[in-house]
Length: 221
Ligand SMILES: Nc1ncnc2c1ncn2[C@@H]1O[C@H](COP(=O)(O)OP(=O)(O)O)[C@@H](O)[C@H]1O
Ligand SMILES: [Mg+2]
Image (cartoon, rainbow, N blue to C red; front, top):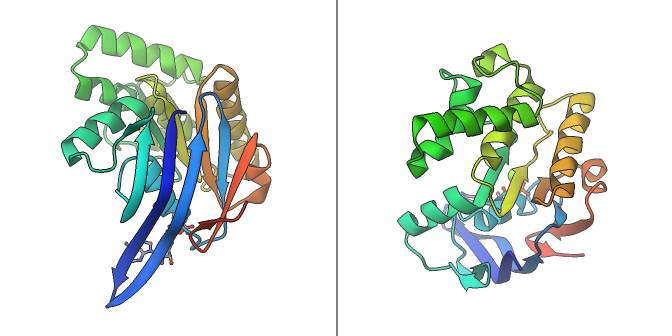
């Protein structure tokens, strides 16, 4: 098991009222899986994604990464685990605007203290792998949405994470480009990467090997 949630709840306090965004969620993600987390707007997907990605901690319940409990670790420890084990892909790409595709992909290596030569070499290889070998020195605004998402995927993969966590990765793309990005995620999964895809779109979700459906903060199937 790569990642498990055990009876996780998350409550937010909003103007004095309690909002239960997650209500007793238990899930297991195994190595090599392609899982879609699907549900309508407001069902708790982003909250779940933040907890699975170690960006936030549950109000109650446990989070286990490779069978080790991480629920009450310090923010600094969680940040390190996140950088090393989770590759994030977001709807809005989240690239740094004033640096090249290559430098965007190098970022996680900089945080890890990898030297300049090796960084350049590894980031170049990763961008070639996602089909952007000719675009290394372009800034994000010189790339199409689909190309920017490929840069984000290359960046997510550069440290060979345990999980690729993609939150609505096709949400800002036209349907053809969205399908290309989905195909790329499937190709990566076939090569052995574990993919967790968060989406409200059931057409996107059906491509996954397994769907976890959530509604009102609960897993319904
Ligand atoms: N920071 C927050 N403060 C208060 N309520 C929140 C916060 N984040 C999310 N919620 C609420 O939690 C519920 C689940 O939200 P969310 O996880 O964003 O759902 P989804 O991503 O499926 O649209 C919603 O009712 C939302 O309004
Ligand atoms: Mg959301």
